[in-house]
Image (cartoon, rainbow, N blue to C red; front, side, top):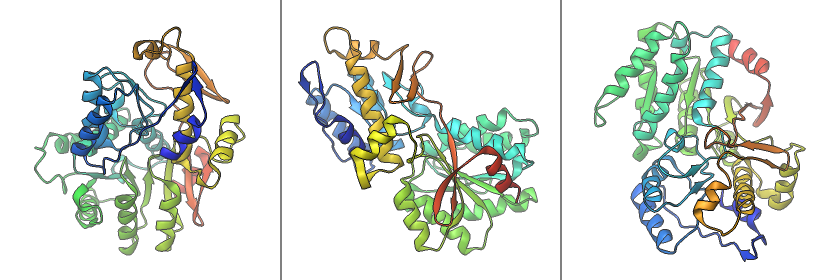
Length: 359
C-alpha cells in the first residue's frame, strides 16, 4: 500500500506545494494505531491516506472525526468506513458487496444456504463481517434458518466462545496459526445440518490466518472451496499456498482491475511500480491518484473543508477508471472474481465460477 501511494505521489505538486507522505507503523495493534495517529495529528497532517487494518482503523476513525481530519482510501471493505464516523472517502467496494456477489453466485447454481459457511476472527471486526454475511443471506429465499443461527451468534457476549453454534468457525487474532477450533466448529455444523460446507467464506482476515486455515483443511482432506476477500496480498499468499502444494480450490473477490488491464491508469501503475506491482500496491496507486485528483479539484484555499467539497457529489475519471461519489462516500462498486488455478489467480466470469461451484 505504501509503495503504491508513494509511486502515485512522486514528484507531484498541488498549487505549487510539494506533498509529503508520512508513514508510521502501528504493528496491527489498535492502541499503537491511536498513538501513531495522535503523533501525526500533532504534526497537523492534512489527511490520513491509505491506513490499513480493520481493528486499527476502527480505533483511529473516532479520533479523525474529533479533529475533523479526512480519511481517504483505506484498503478495507469494513462497515465502519461506510459511511463511518467523520469524513471518510472510500475508493473500493465493500466487503459486503464482495460477500454478496459470491453468495448470490453460489445460490444461483443450487448450493443450499446451509452449505455456505464462514471462517472469521472472533472479535468486533469478525462480528462486523458476520453481519455482512447475514445481510446477504437475508435477501435470499429459504435462508431464514441460517439468518437465525447467525443472530444467535451475534447476540452472544463478546467474551463467550462463539464456535459450535452455526455455520461459522472463529479464530483468535492472538492465535493466527491455530485453525483447529474454527475447523471443528465447521465440522459440528456439517453434522448438525447433515450437509457439507461446500464453500467457506473468509472476510477481511490477513494472509497468515487464512493461509493456515486452508492448509489445515487440506491436511484434513476437506474438499471445501475457500473464498478470500480483496485485502489479501496476492503475491505472498500464492507463495504460501505453493509452499504447501496448494494450487487450486481458492476463490478471491478483487476490487481493482486486473494487473494486465489496458486501462491507462493500470499501465501507468505497471510502469511506476515495476516488479512491485500487486493487487495491494495497485490499490495504493489508485488511492494516491484519487487524493491528487481531489486536491486538484479544490477551489480556492487548500483546506480540509474545501478538500471534502471537492469530492462529495463529484465523479472522477482516473485514467479510464470511473469513481462516483454522487450518492455516498464510496467511489467504486467494482467486484471481479478470480480463481486459483495451477498456482496462479486467473480472472473468471460468473458462469465459470458457477461451473466450479457445481463440481
